[in-house]
Structure formats: structure tokens, C-alpha cells
Length: 184
Image (cartoon, rainbow, N blue to C red; front, side, top):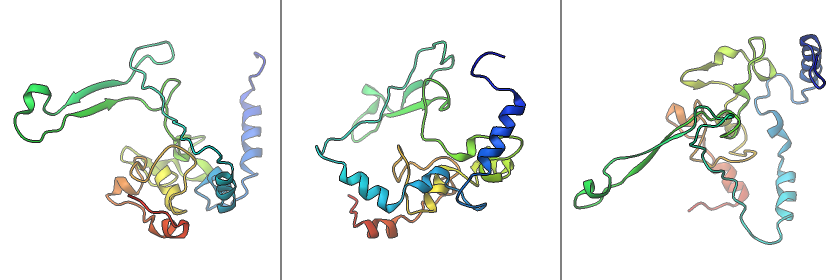
């Protein structure tokens, strides 16, 4: 076996050992997001010294490559240019892409990894359907704690299968009031 690789038996032993160390109990649906406590958030705020924003965006890869054989496709839709006619019109961007892979990514959720028919913390894999994830999606995880997320998504961008996919948004107002946050 090449260096750095493990046998299936070694992997299963490691998996079982790590799974047995979950500190949040059998009903947990947030995973490592549990580490983001109010104290941690306040400590992070104390680290700000320059007041600069840091973009986390990456270009959307649109050319085929060895690590991206099926790249994103971008298309402008709606009335375009001279087709718009008089009055107000909107041209729109349509992007089709695989959001798991080496080239493009997104904030992940615990509902994406299935091992032996189960997801994180023993949740049944059949909670993930073509319509989304009823358990462990980032939208479900965020709803458990007034919108706190580890990175990348804002309130209007819940992952498929979360509360937004069900036609409702999680109520973030109590958390915003506690944080004395004002939204435009």
C-alpha cells in the first residue's frame, strides 16, 4: 500500500474512534459549528484592528481542466441589450455548476457525506432527497442557533433543502436583537 494510505479496516477503526468522541450528544445537528460560541465571536471581534473587509470570493472556473472536466456554464438571460425595449428591464445571470470538487466549492453541510448508509451522528441517509436535506443542511444547522454560520453564506442564501427551500426563512430576528444588529 502506498505511504499515507490506509486499509479499509484502518479507516473503519479511525472512523469509529472519532465518531465515538462527538462531544455534543446524539441529537446534535451542528457539528463543529458548536465551537462558535458568543465568547468566541466576541474574541474574534476584538481581533479587528484595521476595519478592512476581506473578500472570500474566488473566480468561477469556466474552462475545462484536469481537476474540472465539467466547468461552470454562464449565460445571460432575459432581455439583452437592444432587445430590452423602452422602460425598465433586467438582464439576468444564469450559472450552472457542480459545487463540489477541486475547482469550485461552497460552504458545506453535514448532509453531504454518507458512510455505510448514515450521515453525521448516525442520521439516516434517506433524509437527503432530490428536493434537499431534511436533516443536517446548513440551513437547518443555522436555524438551531439564530443564524450563526462558520463562513460564506448570508441570511438570504440558505442551502438547498433548508428553511428557504421549504418556502420560509428561519427567524433570525431574536438573534439580531440580542446582538443589537441592524440590517438595512
